[in-house]
Amino acid sequence: MAKTSTRGRKASPEAAAFRKLLRNASATGDSTSRVQRVMLALGYSVSMTPAGFPAFERKTEHKGIPVTVWVMTREDYSCPASLLDPVFVGFYSTEGPLEMVSNEEHPRLLDYLLKYHDKALGAEKDTTGTGN
Image (cartoon, rainbow, N blue to C red; front, side, top):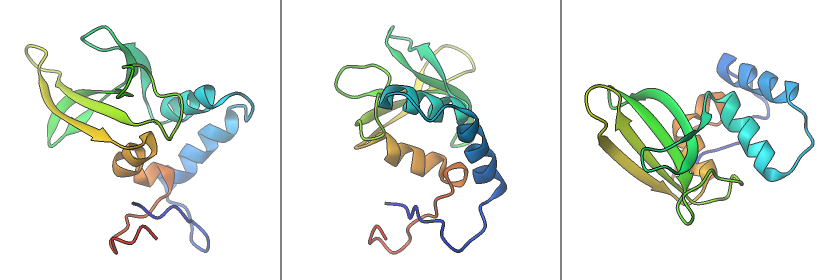
């Protein structure tokens, strides 16, 4: 688990830019719209997976390979509506035939975001193993 407290330290440029994007979005709305704003601010779009399910999609690199990553809920194969939803993440090659190169499951969308977007979220990696 990553540390999420930012008290007493200056935010990284990535975290400051991310927070500015979120401030520009309305603070009202249900959890689904808040999750969508977070994902959009991190560069994701709502898209259909190769299997035809709605998910958050983003082009990136994974283990040095250009990939398209799709993030969806584990239970009903749709876009997560809460940061607490368990998620399945599929990494698909962008070169040549569409092929899954890796996949991961995370107990919460927040865990996935802290693993891959910790700088943007302003979180520090927990190296103690205590979750603090």
